[in-house]
Length: 465
Ligand code: F0G
Image (cartoon, rainbow, N blue to C red):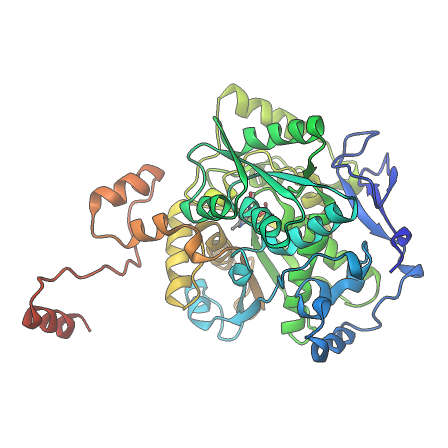
């Protein structure tokens, strides 16, 4: 696949500067805006129908066809196949989830969960990391860095240790990362830099360090990350026999996923591979609700790339003046300054999107319902289900519409939140959850304490089962 048919371009309507695909840049050098990976589709071999991708299925013994990202290579043809780095990411499934659907108040058969926890490092990040890592490898990078609330770092550390192609340097905020994720980064051998600050602080620093030391940055500000994350939507369509659902509901943190999904649908539409696009709902946690504030309250819009960025700058100044930091049990989305804000606004514009915020209480209750339905997820992921429930209640989503909630990460990523929710120990509950404004564990499944005595054990089982 010739790489000169792919290039990078500034997303600003006034600028639009272009760069070669082999350049390493995470902001436009002329105006500082975000950049996209773009393709000259006319010069490329594009699928005639989405069902063409089914041709990959019988070839699953081949490296690219096996990957849930790279079997869609023709939709992200920025690197030649022989340079692609894959560890078999993206083997994820769309699950029809009627039990969770009842909780959300959907008609049977209409709620689906796209479970990205099945990725090799346990979150959706592997989709994007495979693509960014491929680009890093193509340009000869030897070290890669990211700031992270945990999953990006786990994913980067995993790709580095499995492939031995690069060394990982990760930046995390102090006390802001769950044990499941931290343990991955440490065990996979990443150089772990713990900053006295939160994710937003770490993100600002990693950009400076990457620039100063020439380290390849793999946060979702990297446009190649988003190319990989587009494939989550390709797999959703694939599972729905190439039919477009009515809604995609996704948690919003740094806004990489929502941006990538919008780009995926825009490209499929441009190529005539779909004839309509789903609506997009991006869900913030109440304590980290920048997108909700800017989009729903202050009316910030994409406006063909000319939207007023001052709305965001002013809001950030207010946050600083009030010394307001992001604060949510959903630590993965505990972010106040989302780097992909402008791309997300573009996606919301293209997909007729809405933004909502949900409380930590709603997130944990939704998470317990997802778990009771048999698929564990981490708190941030459950924001999508809590958001869908809210949108149903508000009448924005209809009970007969087809809704896909993206479950971004595995349940075992954050056992502390789960155990505290189900615990009988009030002190533990208060310490972990009460301090976040969570008042009750509405769907707790509590362990039953019994003496070490056979008849007492049997009595307890008969009483509770
Ligand atoms: N869900 C999970 C489980 C995440 O780890 C993240 C982001 C998000 C949702 C938000 O996705 O940034 O695309 O809007 N985690 C990043 C990290 C920030 O460092 O692992 P987004």
